[in-house]
Length: 164
Picture 1 (tube, rainbow, N blue to C red):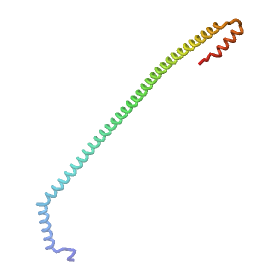
Picture 2: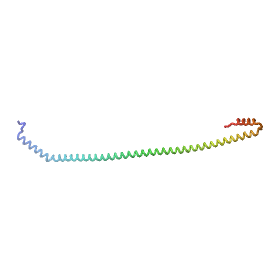
Picture 3: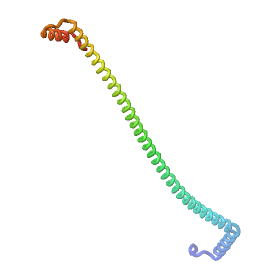
Picture 4: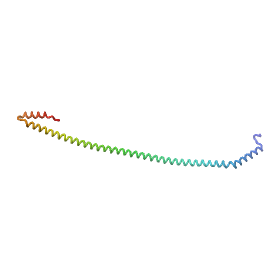
């Protein structure tokens, strides 16, 4: 039974050694260990507080970023809309200017054509008048005693005139 029940002397010295070890640990090691644990606990709490603060700052920054992004999108849409309006305005102005210019050219061409037509009509009238005078002159120069002879001469002169 010696193994199960220790001897009184062994028990006494074990108790004295354990008490001495406990006293030495309490006197020299217990305070630094507790201080180290307390410091570790404080640093963990500070790290958690810092993490929470960083998380809140991140959420604030994220909200700010989303706001800036929305503003940038709105600004981009505004710029694109202004560019479209400017493009449509330029196209409209160009079409209007082209229409005005085409109208001016058409009017100018019409007036030129009208002038040319009037000049051509006047020239034809002058030619006809000259031909008529020449025919009449030629007819009058001839002795026109008989009526058939007059008609024959007139027809002959008309056939000889080359109208261009």
